Image 1 (tube, rainbow, N blue to C red):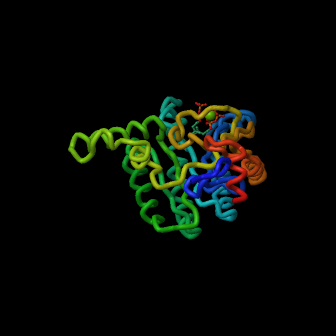
Image 2 (cartoon, rainbow, N blue to C red):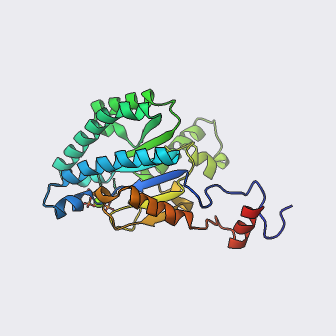
Length: 258
Ligand code: IPE
Ligand code: IPE
Ligand code: MG
């Protein structure tokens, strides 16, 4: 029996203070960064890729095992055709240029989202990169591309519905756990820390399901200016938070000292 004010081992929860195990980032503000310099928007996206490289390196050094980055939302197709085309070109170039180094750095590379819409060339390169790096263990880098949280949940629901229709599953077997097991991030722990750069305080259809208990951090810094120092400020903010997961602050404190 759990004593009042205590929580049992089974209830003990990960990611209290210290370093997050999984960081998820909405890299926003590239266009504004470029506009302020009188440059085309794509210049901001290019600078943004450098920041991705830097953040991947930092996570490796700090031994943060999971990093998930929102690169292109299912709503970003609404942008001018030319920007979408340049973004896809940049994605392909960055992938081809970086994948060898990622592999050497023991990084597992994954993409979540409906990648078929990017066309066969990009989809094939993505699959090759995933295959090449699938046994790497230092850091799992997940890129959300043509990704939407609603799409992800709807997909998982459809998968379960097909299994019910096939008689493999009963409707009452559909639980939060079975739904989660069919999301594209299945098997990856939920993000401990969410960061959005660029000043906006919204989720923009990113990981809707997984962010339920994630600590949120918003900064006005534009993504191309988000350097290691900025990241460490986010980590410091995270380290100072008490995650209660519905319990009382006293219970959480007691569990820490148990
Ligand atoms: C984020 O920067 C990158 C993508 C959405 C691809 P934006 O391009 O949204 O930059 P802002 O928000 O217009 O400044
Ligand atoms: C969110 O940024 C998506 C990515 C960073 C890839 P947006 O710039 O598209 O978000 P909104 O439209 O301002 O909500
Ligand atoms: Mg934006």
